Image 1 (cartoon, rainbow, N blue to C red):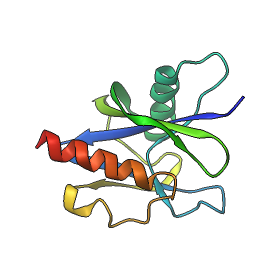
Image 2 (spheres, rainbow, N blue to C red):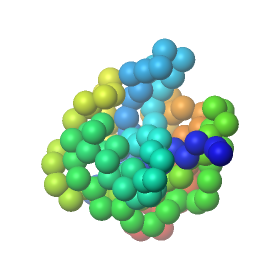
Image 3 (spheres, rainbow, N blue to C red):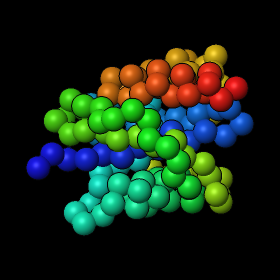
Image 4 (cartoon, rainbow, N blue to C red):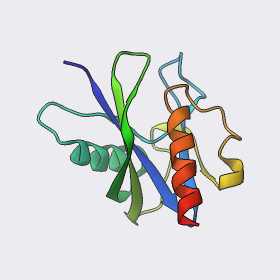
Length: 130
């Protein structure tokens, strides 16, 4: 059974939250959507809420899904949802840094290859919502 990884495209005031990886060493410094692996018996939504609480210290509300399943180099698949912060202020609890990116800044950070196509999909969502 393939590993399912969930990610949150957290959008606030027309900006997207990006997180810089701290580990593993081969991914360190790359930028990604916050999230992580779905535990056995856990729903995608529950995993996403849990991961954002652990990684960012925030409670999120999960919105619409972005695309389908995005393949990752590890053989796992990434599923991403648009999310909004219900409470808390994001902090890099497990990341090197966090950054809010406006539409004109989306490509100012070196996204991990698995996340890059999703950035394009989120950009289309941002364009449609502005």
